[in-house]
Length: 99
Image (cartoon, rainbow, N blue to C red; front, side):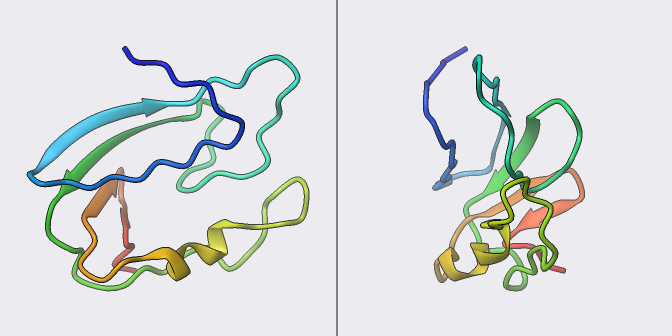
């Protein structure tokens, strides 16, 4: 398992073929979780299926803020969708989310 230490983890996936992977974030001492998308469970982990083709529709992201600091980045995710970007499936949520 590869480990990368970062202060603000953001994962970008560029799939050239269909693939699956797991991602887990462990908070170090003194760090708290401000916001996450998708999901809300205590364990910060995802099982992801990535496809090289785009999802059928543009994303629909959270419009309510659940961030502890009051600044919600998940509502801005649609601003960063690239035309033709890979489709990610995380549980029942796809990104770009087909709604």
